[in-house]
Length: 271
Image (tube, rainbow, N blue to C red; front, side):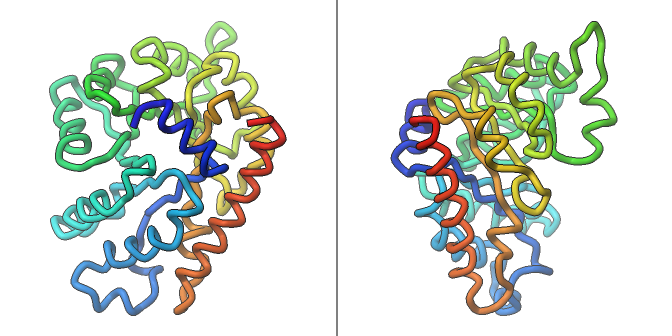
């Protein structure tokens, strides 16, 4: 998906919601455990329930790899079922030496129809650029993550610049605003204004709203740009909104509420 297509999708749908598909068989309704492909069966119903209320989906690869080859097969099935009208993210957090990263990129961009993959930039430029060699595909670089452990390294400072700021500044130069995004956790609302000074035009993938306590309004006020520029991910609050027979309706309702809040925030900034 090209940048303009993503921007147009946000403006036409009037939201910037990404639904996370971190599907855990210990949390899904019991009826799915009888299915041959329980992960996919659950995902299919969640996708059907939420597609009108979001612009993106993000399966976390670990929740499929944990089930071995059958889990990977269901990741492929899920990727194929995701509507191509939506931005499709493989949350894989890959990053290795160049020829290995190239293989990772092929797995998600050639074997599966994902638009983007999350990447850890610690190994440097040659571990990231192989993902950027595919037309209309995106790399989403871990910048400032939402977890508590982000404080261990990402906030380290040298010459007045934090490590996450240096990562963003350097990595932005390897690609462009049409193929590079950054992960910035909603649990760090105070950081968005400074981040927008470094990368004003890039899209940001923002986890941490909902179960992790991130403030949607605070993020939007500092993070939105002229193309929207944000994909706010919500997982547990949506896909596990109910464990009963009404799980689809509950997921749709929760996604609809978030989408409506986002619509208001877009309107406030005349987007």
